[in-house]
Length: 117
Image 1 (cartoon, one colour):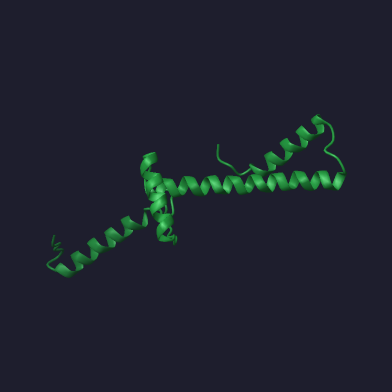
Image 2: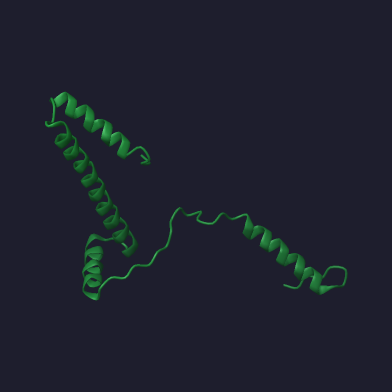
């Protein structure tokens, strides 16, 4: 497409470029809510994960995303367990079931305060 304004083709192209750049600036980066990343995986594990993903009917991205989420959940669970163990060690006993339940609910609420439900 050649834009010709007042007989000057270059100024028309410049205006088209400016318009397109303005339009691009209206698009927010990360609008999809995802971030691409790269990881290094040994060949044998890569093949194992590819096979597992294929059997589960998942894309590679979905497989790695779900695996990482499960591992993060496990680690966070370990932190909650460690906090409970520290409480028992510090106080000398686990207290009554009601106290234990209240303390557990409090810790769970703190650990999941930023979670999107």
